[in-house]
Length: 149
Picture 1 (cartoon, one colour):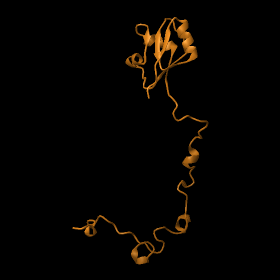
Picture 2 (tube, helix red, strand yellow):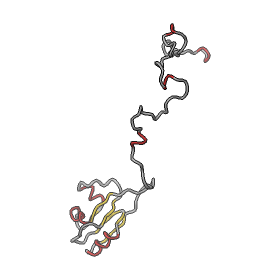
Picture 3 (cartoon, rainbow, N blue to C red):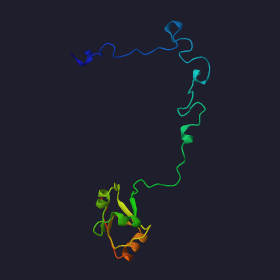
Picture 4 (cartoon, rainbow, N blue to C red):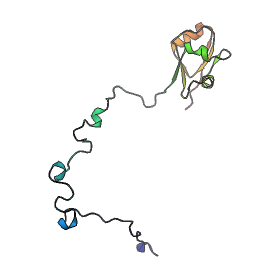
């Protein structure tokens, strides 16, 4: 068998329907387009986004305002008021928070809401200025972890 002798098996190819070729063909006269109306006429017809008079999807969606950087670092935020609940041996780390049931699947950032009653060694990827001030005022230390890509 040679390449020019290869044929598709019977039934693999369907014949193209020839529309508008007389009434005997079954798709004559109006050629399957119905009677009159915009879609029966020649030419481009309706645009792809037309939804029959319903407000189109591109108009229903809210408009995006402002700018969002594509490679912005997303953080899991924890306030200093929560740290005493997760501290173990005067230390708080992302692994410790994960072990205690907090979902830390992104870099950890400590924020300054709440109060800290005891000195803690806090390991985090980022710390706000207010949180750093509060931790150091309570006698604790802040250890910054390098972010891995």
